[in-house]
Image 1 (cartoon, rainbow, N blue to C red):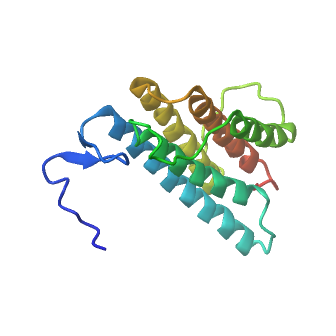
Image 2: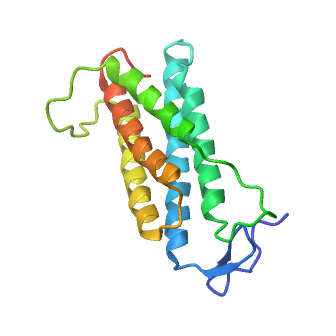
Length: 181
């Protein structure tokens, strides 16, 4: 299968439901930002794995969860890329349980941190922290893009909101000596 299809040479792109839409439409801002987020999450996973290898550490349980977040973003992209939803499309389901799960991970990390009393600035303590902050800011942009686009379930919107909180908390967590997720 070739990477190029030539079907987008006229400025349109295909959605999962088969429709063709101008590439400048808001839906592609959303999908592009989700794709960018998934790429940054991939780099974060790489950095975390390398840290554990360099320090002869076992992988912390958070890495598989971060991988699952990356897959969840692909599922969200599939849902968004299918604006006409009928019974012929089998789409992943998105539930409140996924929001609760991410809140649990946030709470576990937060319970090990000092209370937040000042504004946090990314000060480059380590590359993992820096990448977690990039994940956070790209997630915030995705949240704005999704809000502009509309046509997304409340659960997905809540999840994206919590996802930025997750990366903020992770950045704080990995910046503390000895934590490194």
